[in-house]
Image (tube, rainbow over all chains, first blue to last red; front, side):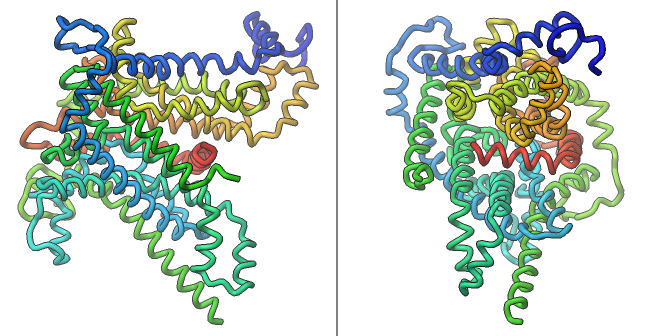
Length: 314
Length: 279
């Protein structure tokens, strides 16, 4: 190293190009230059499509009806939406689906993280195993559970019968209520490790002497949990809930594979309705309007939730 | 002492609960593996058997020889490779810049990288479909990987910034005094130090691209670019489901994910938490 470099600073690689990049890195605009490639990709594949999608929601765009053209229709899609029963049902279902799944995942994540927050090899191995479902694709998770919950072949039915909890096999995806609950359960199995992971990291970041001081003051473990653990975790829990609500409201994957919206629209959420409108009816304008409404609702949720949870205050 | 007995009991309960959650997470996956080794007659039966009579490899043989699964997997490998490359090149540079430089609009830009994750996938997919069709990248593996960059690149940048933050800037200053250019200091001094983090982030992106279903379903249509999640879902027929085949293909497909996760889990978990908490 350091031999044979003729002038100035050493480039990171040989050749003229290397020297040119090296020289460029000494200019004042270098921090921006570094960002340009990623910014270009994001503008191209996220921002432009999003804006385009919003503009589509004000236009006619049906791939199956090219004769209608792609003219501007103003708020017509939004007016249609207002009179669309399926939209209102999907909205209610989205609310149920997200609330139930996130509450269950948060509870399971909190309990598992509190338990796993110990020293020793056994709990370390358990932590890795707990995280595993989160890395499984929806396609595998959904089909796997569809087999296990099957009305005729399902091992879950068999186990519940043997334990005496049910009398005979149940067709979980046959009625609206049990269908939704089964889907929520599967989603919870798939998604709770996300909460475990974040809460575990939060727990490890709490200084141990806080608990020692509390126990000197005579606080029991419940009091320590209420007055130390929970307040220290608030920021993480709020962040985790927001991220999870966003991804649950935006992603129709699991329900698309598992139920396709059934039985009887009981698991038809807005993202799924939008996806089917785009993918099956090829009505891009209306699907765009549905997605814009999702985006607006998510923004409203984030603002209200951040206000209520007061994490942004000093 | 009463306190220590209480503590010991709490510890015991915690171990029990932790073990319970681990089993809850893993047992369904174990059942998938068991099912993949059963014959169709053992799966479609009125009396469920928990363990297969003998280890049947027939399902795996059928998936490999009689379906187009090998080519689906190959498409997934290529798409994943493109996605990881895009994220590694564009993402590392941006993450490094965010970590090391104070410049106007830095905070706003970083926030922008986070906010873009809030946009509904369906809203992005439709225009992407139209754009990719216009430029001739619809139904190609490269076009699909560009679409994946839309949600994986911002995540990569945030995670990678955490790893760069952990490297003390003094090291680069020393390198610069020794005569390195800025890019030289980054490539020669800093990159070797964040190798582990870079690997973890790459694995995370790879898993995300490998597993993705929705974009693939919408943006690919031919055998030349269709990825395995779409192919697997297409095996699910209307009436009689080929459970054995499904289970075997599921196991084959999640094998790389589990293996990669096992290798880099510690670094990846750290990166994930850093990225997510700061977000």
